[in-house]
Length: 115
Image (cartoon, rainbow, N blue to C red; front, side, top):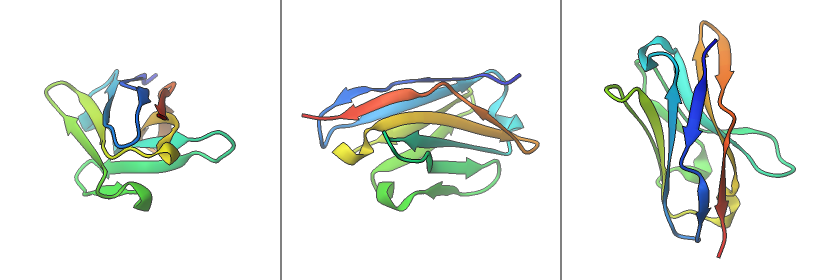
């Protein structure tokens, strides 16, 4: 069983920045795809950013130019750097990893953008 542990959420003012981290229990190299999803109250979960093992990154239109997904293989950790945060970015953010068509999820970390 793969475990994904997120951290880094919290309260931030509009225009501020946060960095989320996701540490999997297995090597990042073993996953076909990794990414971040978010779910705001009353809305469906949506993909925010992702990358394939050997491919380029994907970003949802509303976060392009503001969010950056990255990974540190030495630390075996995936990150989501979020800048110029807006109130509409408020959501629970989930780490996702796919291996052999099986989806794994973290428990989520809450990001609240408010003044």
